[in-house]
Image 1 (cartoon, rainbow, N blue to C red):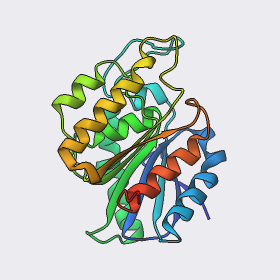
Image 2: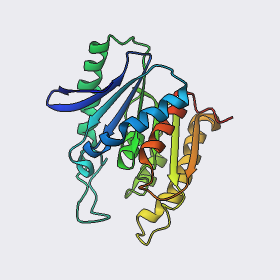
Image 3: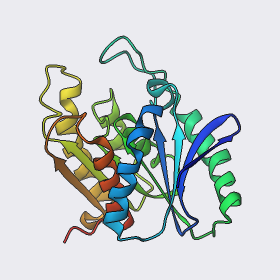
Length: 231
């Protein structure tokens, strides 16, 4: 059963129960309509293993989740580069609130993840803090300007990372977004070098970017919770 509450003026969506695993996901309001599908996908993957899900509502997607400023890549909405403010809210306000509310143990594992720009934010956040043991980045926006160079110079602090991409996503006339294919392959290689091959996997999904995002994200969280076991 899901519920919503306010944390210092920001809306969060909660599901599940107090557990040794807590999933954190930046969400747009429209994603709530599909959230149960995502949770069902996670439940099926982990076969009923308990977890707490915390969705953080994002009102300015391009602004709140972009790690640095960048010009518009599609449409006319620029990227404001306010990811640090979002991460600071998560680490300094949201997580302490969740720890107290659910009396979480110090051994609780926090897994950060999301879809598209939220997936990129999760990958970026893992280079800034070691609070997240796992990252579930489904179709992350690794085409983001200067991301490939950043990832090369800033290792992740997570222990497990899941990556995915739709096989049609790199097939686009937009030259920036077409970099998603080679960039995610490069990132996969980097992370396997940093973490070991068994601790980072890349899965390719059929279709483009807007097909079944909630299922892809749920699959990612499930894989990280299970330790990325693929056999």
